[in-house]
Length: 361
Ligand code: G3I
Image (cartoon, rainbow, N blue to C red):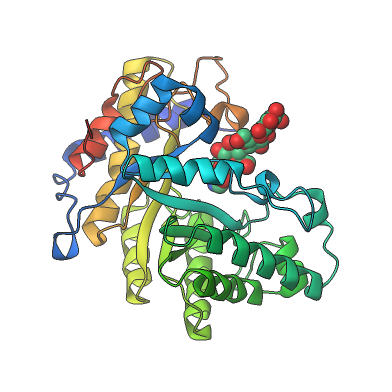
C-alpha cells in the first residue's frame, strides 16, 4: 500500500465533512448479534512480544479483546529460517495466551507475497513451490489445529491496481503455480484442520472509485473460481485499512457483500484502522473523523451481514504500524486506532461498542 502524497488537504477536509455528516445520520447500528443471535467477537491484532513483556499492553488486550490475531509471528519470515526449519516460538506464545484468557485466535497468514524469507523468494519451479506450500501449511496448521480457529489462508491475492477481473497479484506463488495455488493452499489447510475457518483476505475493497470497483470485481471473480473448483473456503476477510480521504462506497460495498454472501461465504473484518495522515491535526476533529470512517464501514457491513468477527489492526495508538508507511506531514503522531496512546477510549472505541464490542473486565 503506497502513501498518496498528492492528497489535497482541501479534498481531504471535504471528504471528512462528508464522512461525519453520513455517520451522523446513519441509522443506529443493529446490535451485533446476527443469525440465530450469534454474538460477534471483537478484538485486535497483537504484537506477541509485548503480550509477554508489557503488562499495560497485555492488560488492555485482555480488557478489550475476545479474539486476537498476530501482526507478526506466524508469517514465513518469522518462522522459516530455511527450507527445512520451523520456529514456532511466537506462535506457541500466542495460542497459549489466547487459551489462558479464553480468547479466539486467528492465524495470519499462510500464503502471502510479503514477509517471505529469501529462500522462499528464490523457489524456482512449480514442484518446489508445491512442496514448500504443502510442507508449510500442513505443519503450521496441523500444529495449531483446534487452537487457531480461523486462518487467513490467502492474503492479498489481487494486484495493487486491478485492471481486468481475472488479474491476480504476480506473487512467487502465482508465478510458479498460476491461480491454482489458491485452491491448493485451501485444500491443504482444510486437510490439516478440518474445523478451521478458511479466509481469503484483501484490502482496498471498501472505497468509492473506479479503481476499487475493479478490485471488488476482481475479488468476486476470484471467489467464484475458487467455489467452482470445489476448494474449501468459508469467508472473505475485509481488511478495512480505511483512509481519512477515501469515502466508503456504501451502495457498492453493500452490493459486493451481498454478492459474496450469495456465494455462501461469510465476512470477517480483519484489520480495521483508519489511516489519518490526510486528516486535520486537531486531535478532537481527527478522532471524530476516524470514528466516522469506522462507523461508515461497520454500518454497511452490519446492514448486509453478520460478520464472523471484527478485529482492528492494533488497539492503541501507542503501538501502531501506520507511521512506518503513512507518516503525517505535520509530524504529529498518527491516531488510527480505538484507544489513544494512554489506552483511553476514543470515539472509534465508542463506535465498536455501538456494534457490540464489550469491555471484558
Ligand atoms: O522483529 C523484527 C526485529 O527483530 C527487527 O529488529 C526489526 C527491524 O528490522 O524488524 C522486526 O520485524 C518487523 C515486524 O513487523 C515486527 O512484527 C518487520 O521489520 C516489519 O516489516 C513488520 O511489519 C509488519 C508488516 O505487516 C510486514 O509483515 C507490520 O508490523 C504489520 O502491521 C503488517 O501487517 C500487514 C498485514 O500482515 C497484511 N495487511 C496489511 C498489514 C499492514 O501493512
